[in-house]
Amino acid sequence: MSGKTEETLSYEQARDELIETVRRLEAGGTSLEESLALWERGEELAKVCRRWLEGARARLDAALTEEEEEEEAGEG
Picture 1 (cartoon, rainbow, N blue to C red):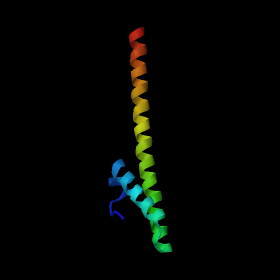
Picture 2 (tube, rainbow, N blue to C red):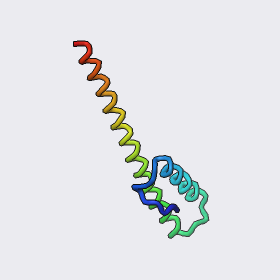
Picture 3 (tube, rainbow, N blue to C red):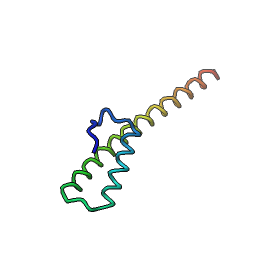
Picture 4 (cartoon, one colour):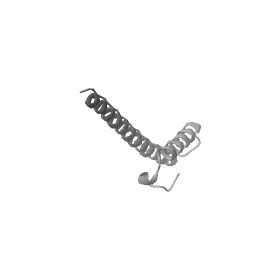
């Protein structure tokens, strides 16, 4: 597992590590303790990805709202 903290991971880094974590869990062959650690890390990584996506959605929504306001102002 990566030693990077959640704050320093880009979306792509978190996604890639999450994919690898899921792959390792699905492959099996790990002890219960290792599986739990992988599961917990996967949950953390999913939260990082979710925050990035929510932030991107908020930026997109703000840009669309701004564009609509500019179009409405130009019509008056």
